[in-house]
Amino acid sequence: MSEQVSYYREENFSLYQVNNNYSLLLQIHANAFSYAVIYQNRLMAWAEDCDYKELDDPAEEHDLLTYDYKNRVIGLPASGFTLIPEVLYNANHLGDLARFLDVKPTEKVFAQPLDDINYVVYKQDDKIIAQAEKFGLDKTVFMAKGWIAAIAASQPHPDQLYLNLDKKQVEILYFANNKLRFYNTFYFNNSDELAYYAVYVTQELQLKPENLNLVLSGDIIIDDSNAGRLSQFFNGVELNHLRPLSLPAEIPSQKILALAALSLCVSSEVY
Image (cartoon, rainbow, N blue to C red; front, side, top):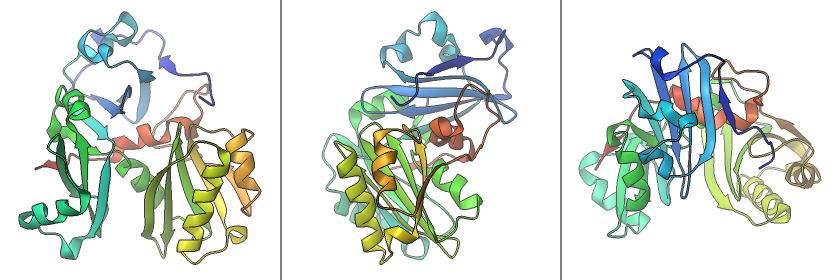
């Protein structure tokens, strides 16, 4: 990880203080999960890269997971997805749309509005779904939905390309005329591959890297090897300082952005 901070709980905050005005935000990853407890737009507790076993039998430091929160948002990753313009989306034809995803017998398909003009149809393996079911599949959302919504609300400029890194996966997002023009994810093994995908996206968008500024969030700091390599191809590289939540000083805003932005989400439909 690019930062050593991976756990936080506000001083004197305990499970006994939790009430229905508190919300749980959860990201279910392939082999781990991260979560946050929030109250009135304020971060009360947070942990990342937790073992699945904590969902069944939480250790003392994760006792907040045992509470039956009235408000929950569970972000699910996608093993495959496609974006459909809202004007073309029809729930009755979801089976036809799912054919583009090559859905396996061990996978489920989800669909929900991604923004004002797009639906996202995505799939995930039953192993990950089983972890989300402990909190209610009706509370699940496409993992990137909050991050996309937060950036959309910030009035993004057409000279900015947004990247969110999670270990060896990068999400790349671009807006033009205040509308989502590009979103996709790529797996990379090193900084050269990361730079390749970022440049590849700009070429697909018929843009020039030297005219674009990269705005970075997730598993990255401004002076690490990934940011350094990206800076060699683009006009500028900066961290994303959007704050959907009020955060303590010790937690960098870019590190927790995708999780914090789940507070902007609503539940998806399950099919």
